[in-house]
Image 1 (tube, rainbow, N blue to C red):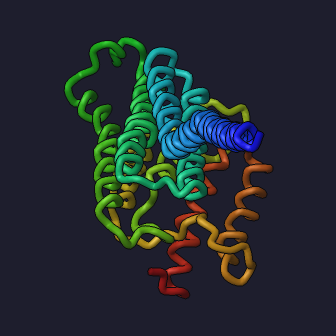
Image 2 (cartoon, helix red, strand yellow):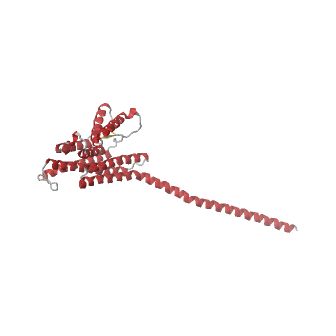
Image 3 (cartoon, helix red, strand yellow):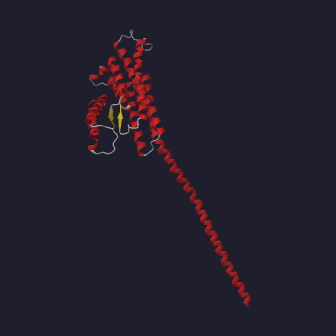
Length: 302
């Protein structure tokens, strides 16, 4: 009897041990299953974060490429359609996109060497070649308006006339020089040395707006004057690569004390554009240059 009781006790103990072992195995199996279930989630989260990083890194370049396309469209419209108004609009679009790509790069802290080089290459087209084509078209129109049809051949101009027409492309050359200089000059962070290429392109685009506006403006006669256009080209090339300090519209804060010049420029520019609309952009750029020169006399910018 005692032997039978001992066997039963040993069997119960063995059963307890087996059930404990089963429970431990089930617990281990469940923990392994939980781990396996968590791995895809972790990988998915990692993949999403990597994708977000790629998007943030690529977003500024995306806007840069859109600006480049806008510049190319402006060139096509100037040459094939001769619509200087629409060509100027696309230069303005490129300028807005140029502002956006820099702002996005600063917000997402995604400023890269690749982005800088791509931005400069895009600017050569949008703010160098595109405005040069507008100037080329204006010089061509100056010949057409000042000469009878028999004296000027639009398809095959005389050699001397060709040289005058090709002077427009000096703007593209000096814009490229300006951008190369900017890339190598580490001091041009808060302010600029020389007129920025977008500002120069906007000034030239405004000449196209003036040529096709219905408003009676004093400069409307000048935009078809070859002497005025040649002087514009020379001054434009000079100020692009000059060492004249120009203030930027980058706001490190929004206090009036630190940004009084910027706020003054914005307020006067808005008033000019309300009165003269887009043709008034030429006056806005001249105001920008004038305020920069006055500021240089009063405040020493870095």
